[in-house]
Image (cartoon, rainbow, N blue to C red; front, top):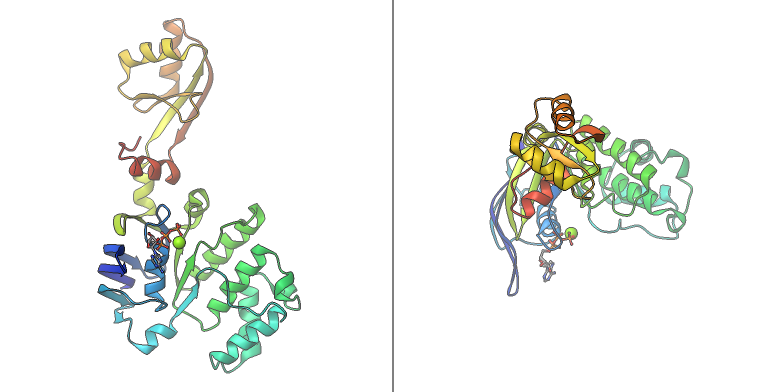
Length: 301
Ligand SMILES: Nc1ncnc2c1ncn2[C@@H]1O[C@H](COP(=O)(O)OP(=O)(O)OP(=O)(O)O)[C@@H](O)[C@H]1O
Ligand SMILES: [Mg+2]
């Protein structure tokens, strides 16, 4: 079963078409990384899923049920933009208030649970306004988790976080997915997303252009040998006689060879042609480079 199944979703804001027939499939238990340039329609899609705005047309099923089903609404936790918290109340009281709104029976137990999940047990008595950005984002997730949602929808939750904040957020989201919930998370920080996502959806101009699993991404990201040499032009000419795919890397520092049998072959071949290799590594392209190549309509290499 899928947690989210969207077919041919459109959304118009007056003249502006934000979603132009989007299809999306988010499997149960996945951490689905939702990627796309500014204005491509990520937040709009997420807002429609959470019932914050209405679709223009199309079909949406959450755990096989329509969005209009009241049980479906209750099964979605959401953090889009800022968490709706009172600045002067403590973290604890904000969460108790939300638990009251949701008519949760054992409020204190529920709040203790979500605080533990987002690693905030020690900060319950802080006023919300005195919390750091990273803490506020985690409080937002705690609020979203209070109703025990099967689906958590997060819009750029790692934006602006420092390295430690990102690490904690990674752990929190991984724990949530392990507990059986599904996480839909949009982000521009692809290096971070790649560490936790099990699935990806890449949106452009309001349409899904690629959906794939992390394994499929891994398979479509080729490995290469990167070498450093004094005279890149000369080395490139020599390499081009033997190897088909030789390009300069983004920083224009190293030459990448994609179809080498082994790094040793390259070093020996160049040495035989009077070129000394002064740096050597094997690497693999990642999500970020895959995405950039895709956006620029280049072959993934
Ligand atoms: N309330 C609105 N009224 C008019 N146009 C809107 C509204 N909300 C979004 N749009 C437009 O819809 C398109 C999609 O916006 P959306 O916020 O979904 O993009 P996004 O992928 O979340 O971008 P970002 O990465 O910048 O957050 C944009 O062109 C945006 O200007
Ligand atoms: Mg957005």
